[in-house]
Amino acid sequence: MPSFKPVLLEAVGVPDGHTLASYVARGGYAPVAKTLGEKQPADVVEMVKSSGLRGRGGAGFSTGLKWTFLPKDHPGPIYLCVNADESEPGTFNNRILMEDDPHQVIEGIILSSYATRASTAYLYLRYEYPKSWQRLQAAIDEAYAAGWLGKNIKGSSFSLDVYLHRGAAAYICGEETGLIESLEGKRAWPRIKPPFPAIEGLFRKPTVVNNVETMACVAQIARRGVEWFKSIGVPADPNNPRDPGSYGPKLYCLSGHVERPGCYEAPLGITARQLIEEHGGGVWKGRRAKAVIPGGISMGLMTESELDTPLDFAGPGKVGCLGLGTAAVVVIDDQTSIVDFLHNSCRFFAHESCGQCTPCREGTSWSLRMLERIKAGKGRLKDLDILQEIGNTMGMMPGSTICGLADGAAWPIKNAIKKFRGEFEDYIKRTNPSGWMVTEPVPALQIVGAH
Amino acid sequence: MIARKKILTDEMVAKIESLAPRYPNRRALTLPALHVVYAELRHVPLEAVVEIAELLGLAPAEVQDTLSFYQFFPQEKPCGQVRAFVCRSVSCALRGGDQLLEHLCHANGIEPYGTTPDGRLTIEPAECLGACDFAPCILANDDLLASMTPEAAQAELEKPRGRAT
Ligand SMILES: Cc1cc2nc3c(=O)[nH]c(=O)nc-3n(C[C@H](O)[C@H](O)[C@H](O)COP(=O)(O)O)c2cc1C
Ligand code: SF4
Ligand code: FES
Image 1 (spheres, rainbow over the protein chains, first blue to last red):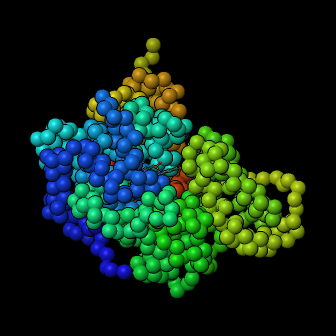
Image 2 (image 1 turned 135 degrees about the horizontal axis):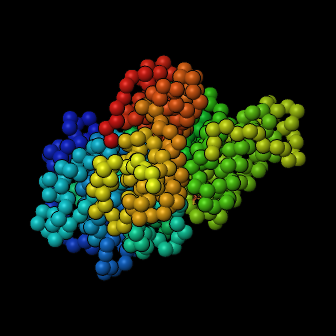
Image 3 (image 1 turned 90 degrees about the vertical axis):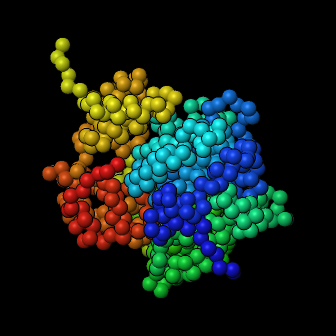
């Protein structure tokens, strides 16, 4: 593979890389001046569409295409919401972009707002990122002072205000309509779609929701060109008309049982094994991986034998995972219990389900209760079938819930039990020698630490 | 009529009002207002909810509904001068996050979500803090305590710690 030079992360390690001066010295904001002077919004939409950029927030939807869903000739206002809720376990690339190169994010916001004809952009930032808050606010202040934000930017007719809006520690605020409800001052209950945000979103106006890394990609496409972006990654599969390809650089978050956890930029399509070996210094303590999360906990699990799967938008799905998600790769070594892993996953989703849809509220809560019971040495083989049934029936894919949180809760359950059933069975038989074969209903245990 | 002491100070109201031009309606000020009050008082008592509702032209139940959803703003009493969120999600758990939480609760004689009797420290389990490269980690007020051992974490939490944001 030819050596790859980081672009999205080019400011990392640069002294004062987060400042306006550093960003401009690296070629930043020149594309904004050029765009506002020479191009129409439709040109920017076309540029992003033809680059093949797919959203980095988890769903991988074409960014340019999403923008075309906005109504034509709308009198406004149109809103851009930048999704910086970043709460998917294992994920921290937005944090690094906001802390180390906030102007790259802001430039992407300006270009995207121009393309979508938004004159107000809200950046919804999770509460747990105080340093991002400070760096972004300082960068926004710098950008206003230098005339990159505000009224009639650089003498053009385009005006834009960017506001930071702070969350309050809830995962569901990352779901785009949950984010919108939260911004409006309400509980973050995802909305039933349609209408999609592009038609009726924030304050009932047409709205685009995009991820922070997506914004950074837009800035880089404007600076380096569509051809540059398309030269990186995995081209569309000619035999699959539904595969639009996976183009561009991607920020992979590597954590868990690796020697060197961190955020690494690589072409889309690097395999999990390459990431772990070449960037992460291998599995820690010279051990082997038992399982690897390919893209945040919602995406499920790959086994050690599946580690050569390319981490592009199409790859993880081929081994039964939900998708690439946030490209957060978490390594689980061979001395870790999969029962413990699944308990941790179920606890997360039971805690974060917003409670609107019965299958999600009850499914996440009962799967946690069952894992608590299994861990307490009172599991039954039958529980594994019940867990599978919960996994198969809750979510947008089976069509029983409003948002994708439930699919994210289901996938680790389905993958863990399918791919590691033997380990679950051994654990249950070993810890519950007198009751593992019981099939009659059993009472739930007192549960701690969940609500 | 007995004059009631207002919870929202003039400064708090001014701060909330300074954000009003950012939004097309006043309900969107709910979270910012809750944050303003929380930043000063380290909790948002019910009286403050009523006053926020009055300020924003909402029913108190609307503000309370939002507040209660997030389970982030303590209501009964202020959290400690240091509020420590100890991550228990997957990457931290793989590197000892649960043990870290247990150790810290034990060392400070409190249960998870509890506050020390001197009001200095609150310890809460948290889901992924977005710093999995530094697992296991803790967010103590504005400071990320990275790659913690139980001993190092206890020493860190004994230090005084302000808040900038
Ligand atoms: C439960 C749930 C949580 C989500 N959390 C986030 C998040 O924290 N950040 C994010 O950008 N997208 C998140 N998403 C995806 C968003 O709904 C949305 O697709 C995304 O922000 C669109 O941006 P993009 O097109 O640039 O990827 C989440 C989705 C679901 C179902
Ligand atoms: S699927 Fe779960 S998180 Fe999503 S809206 Fe329904 S209850 Fe809420
Ligand atoms: S899992 Fe602890 S910071 Fe992400």
